[in-house]
Image (cartoon, rainbow, N blue to C red; front, side, top):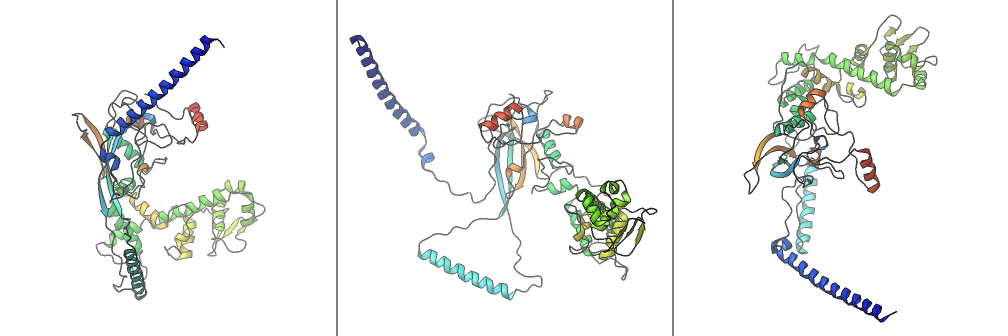
Length: 461
């Protein structure tokens, strides 16, 4: 190696060492400056737990405002996805505690002796534990498990526009909330079942007071043939009871049809037809004949005669009550099955009665009767009482922004109050909302790449 080369290497090494020393010194200085710039309170402050527990709003992506692909915009950000929310900020405004009702005494107004003794034992145990705790110098903390109704203010991004260039307004957001809360909405972002004041009335389109009245009438029982009158209910006259109970058979026909539909969708196999009806029948033959479909439901649900309820040669059905239907001449359907059910249970509406035979996943006879009655009324509930719009001004600015206020139970996940924004004009034209059918979770780089190729996620600025 030449002397010139050795000198060059030496100069490079010295330069590198000097740069490293300068870099470390500068880095330490800058780090100290960053720390010293922070207020002391920020570094040392330890906040006490919130005395009024409430769900934490889903984090909102902080990005420049402007026009985005509205069809890909939810109210709140969705964890694990790239969807851009149309909300600018979410704030908890107030929290109201719901007081629990005192149910300490029994219906007779007397205390249960066993319960009283148990409470004394528990009380003594707690006192003992408390004393031991105090002796040890430990502090006990009570956990607040009460229910709260939390009111939030959601400020909307400004400058958002729909595809036709029209601005997104708070009224458009309210329209979307009601569309997702409607009873006929069947998508992933249903709001109708959430614990929100006024939501049940809007979702069902039945006033709460009316619902309580109808449920009271049904629970009291129907017309007593021996007494020739309805049960007496304070504040309700027999005409009102007659109107509600006039829907009994209409609801019963739906109840029976649910059974027929269930049997013919869950037992649609030749093996079941052979076992319940005849080895000479196939389900294809049953499916092609409405009488046979009803007869099949009779037998599977236990309303056929115990032995040989169906006669293949004569094409007859003998019911559990002994009635014989000639399926060549007679027509049987849901109403005939309902009459058989009523006869069997003698009008018993308890869980061990008619409701015991409800098809899985379907309504009870009481629910169907109430629905039949409501459908004949002219209720109109256009708004959700605890959700409304407003305007707000950001601190230090004069610019007004539109916002939405809503109240929801602390027992609900705030993220459940989410939906994708749809142009009301587009909804009126197509009857469809922009909700994605599937929200894909980004779990790793491989799945993220697949999602980018499918074009199912992402936003356009």
